[in-house]
Length: 70
Image (cartoon, rainbow, N blue to C red; front, top):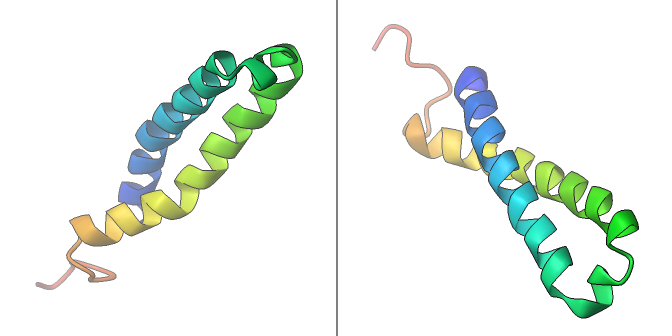
């Protein structure tokens, strides 16, 4: 499940980082200091993707820890 979680994290982290960067650029209060806010927003997107990718990997695996021997 770890490998699936890592693959999901790569895709989900990139997506959430892009969404958070767009939010920073679209909100006038954040856009005023965009050069400082974008790295924080992108890091937050990647960090938020870690637990979400684990949950998605569990759903893909059907809640099982391992599929060996099934």
